[in-house]
Image (tube, rainbow, N blue to C red; front, top):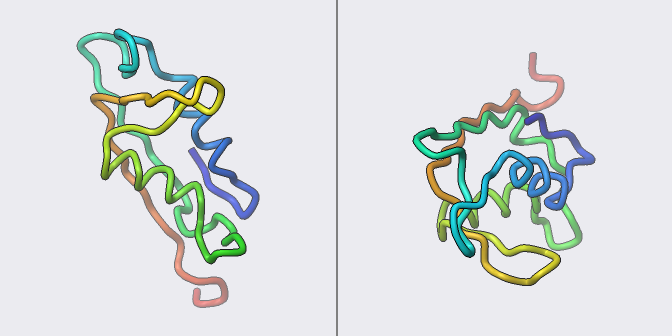
Length: 96
């Protein structure tokens, strides 16, 4: 997954949710017996909002800290298992 200045938290959640299988009520993850490694390129790119927050990064941080996020349509908790993140960032613009 590649972040840009236009990447939103909704897009990030949709991309990751599309790859998940439902295991049981409220629990999602990769197919049984497998693990997902999600590579995030340009982690430093999402634009800050009015409150100086990069929402796509906050969504990933919520998953890492709490192990879940919420379904935007049903407003229910979605636990996500067997998933880890690898990310990279470019140096600030003009420094190379």
